[in-house]
Amino acid sequence: MTLFTAETPFESAAIFTFGLQFSGFIVAYALQTEKFYDILGSGNFLLLGIWSFFASSSPYAAVSAAATVLFVISRLWLLLFLGWRAHERKGDSRFDGVKDKAGMFFFYWMMQALWVYCITLPIIYINTIFTLEDDVSSTLTVYQVVFLVLFGVCIFTEIVGDVQKTLWVRRGREGGFCTVGLWKYSRHPNYFGEIFQWWSAFFLILPILFEKPSVYGWACILSPLFTCFILLYAGGTGLTNAEGSGLKRYYENATLADDYKSYRENTSILIPMVGYGSIPNGIKRVLLFEWDRYEYKPQTSPTSKEGKKEN
Picture 1 (cartoon, rainbow, N blue to C red):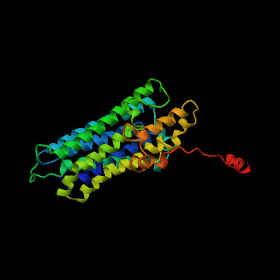
Picture 2: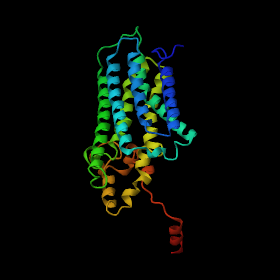
Picture 3: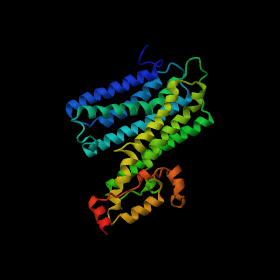
Picture 4: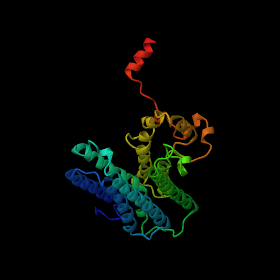
């Protein structure tokens, strides 16, 4: 088996990605720094996307070219944004008490490798699935146009959301919580953009999966599923970090509590929309990600419980 060719794209991508992130771990642990963690992850995305496109031995399909351009825009923004954020913050609190522990630090780097690999699967697939024998179309179908547009809209939403939140922070966090631009219609428009761009990418390749099925092809669903896991379920990041106990800074602030409660009741947690306040809670729970795990539940101290029992 020859590696780093279009004939073994998924194996090549895995070896390159895990090798690169392992090398990053070695250097980062030796220097006791996390400063290039996000940058190396974002750069890994770009290398895989560009490599998989130019490594193909077949005539370039229009859908492959369009998807790759959108992918590069998405991950280039991630590289620029995370690089700027790391510079501004002069560190990353996620790694406090972690980077001096080899095993845990290694786990963080390998999780980043898994994240990069899984997210990129649809792009690797669409760039390398066609062969010289295939009748590769130079035009896009209506179906492909629809999901490429959705892919692009979600990328745009994430970028705009990030920029609007950053500018709001720089202006002094007016109002206590962000309600500017897209944040008026979604409490987390950037997460919406990140999650649904990978669902768009997966549905973009779905007809090809039925036409040319393979284990690696169907494994592409890991791209949106892994993104959902990270941003909807994983602790310390995404909605689990921003909602739930993370809302303490609003609900236990007398000047913000009432305003934030109103904002929360009338603003979608994820999907930007108007009229959210009039939607029944049951529909919000089932279809719109307003799950119980994201509710703020003040912790009651043991002394408070004892006092209530005595009364």
